[in-house]
Image (cartoon, rainbow, N blue to C red; front, side, top):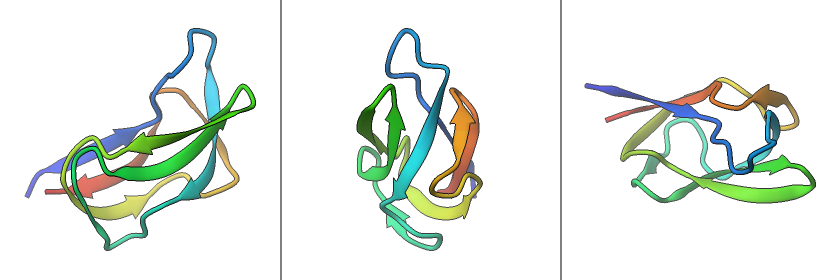
Length: 79
């Protein structure tokens, strides 16, 4: 089975990091590509981030309330 890294996307030119507001899925949940996976706050804006692929969420590396850098590995899906 292949693994897909979920990276924190950059959704603004000046965005350097973002805070994980809420995970919409839990470890063990199945997700489809494009399905909303989490909410991120950056520059006073909250954005829902879709799953980059289909599979099962097998790990969450950055918990709610924590801030992390753009393009940081925040979770893993397994196909």
